[in-house]
Length: 433
Image (tube, rainbow, N blue to C red):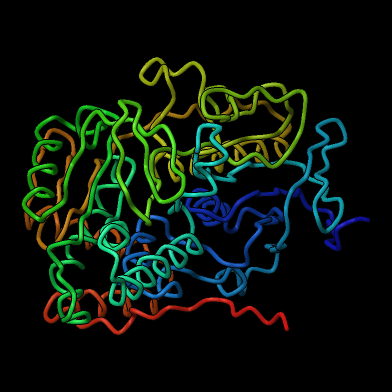
């Protein structure tokens, strides 16, 4: 079956994945005179940096999601198809998808990454990832459901497990969700559950490395750990998780932690959605590209963002960090290459592809109310200044005026009174008779 999209005599660019990199590419290709087709398994874009606020009942899922079709309205040569890519035929330049065959002239793989459980299938079944909006909703339901169960639990051992939340992973996501839960414990739980002894609630941050935020400066790491500790988070540095089963988290050193909520943010791996013998995979299953972001072994195929790793960049011999700013800069680079090639074809000349050079714009992580760390160029700072900067940067990055307004109102409302009304448990009912 062939996908129902007519070529109309124009060069076709197929983009796999509507994340930050994929959408930046679509924006950069606006007015290029070519046909662009976006393929994604969902019909909406989600904003990963704020998923932890969905998980901690600070924001609704719709506040950080935006429908692709709304976004692409008015662009006649841009198409969206919801589905999954099954394989690539590089010789025929065709994708086999869940909705049929889709031919391309240029292909850009921006499929992003998913949670890495490092091959431990039991871990994958027993812990809670935090990579998608759906993950955030599931995590929110679990946390709130366990609080409801704790309210009526009489067995002391079970109560402790219900009130213990373990966060595995000391990167930005781990630090942010641990801080959000500590704020929830301090300000929300005492009001919502006045009969509960909140002193029994524990937020434990398990980090396999010796320090938090390993990608940042040691001073920023120390500040983040100090702030979290002051907020009541128990930080466990150098602790490696071996297993999770029957409500117990097992460490490699033999120690254990009884908990009914394990949040896994210990790493990511590239999304695996295709099978092609020509493609070379690097660390974390990332697709290997050259310095122009061309996939090695394939013609007219590029890969950007978390799904790819650049081979040959002397400044980043182990690959660029899997950050939003990397994906967006790579999208701009690929857009320039495709435009150059198109212009060269029209003039009948030759032109070289754009070489990717990453420009580090800085790194930030929020910890809690008026607490954050930021590193921009040689500046390293924290506190309320870093926190306000984090708010501004993320608010500007959200898609849609409505989403920006809703998130801003939520943040202001929560800042002044912590009376969010989003602590609702939604779940599928078992309709089996």
